[in-house]
Length: 143
Image (spheres, rainbow, N blue to C red):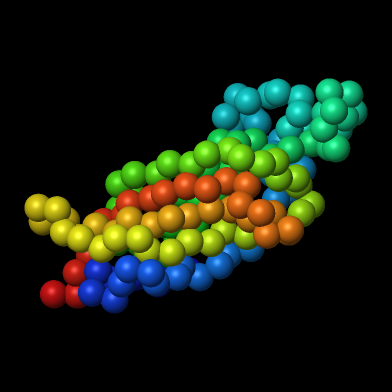
């Protein structure tokens, strides 16, 4: 990740490289402080278990941010994220790897912008899509 992707090098159906993230409890506490989301299910194991969860869970908005970082990391420093959406369909836990994956669904020009739509998602270790989403990035042209 981090190299520039150019509009001319992208095609529909192209896979984005998978990226494994390993969220930690520390990261959740840091995110709670930065976001102001101090709901106990994100840092207090006893509380999370008392309401029926198996343990603390990752903030949904943090997973959204992970998807944003994933697609912008793929697109490169000269790209612009134009749109990002996601849905929270499953829980993810610190200490378990989360894999970000995606593929290009549309390549098109709108005005002077070179746009690429992508389907993106996070998968848990069982291969279930816990956080599906979409993104549109504007890419630079080689010309």
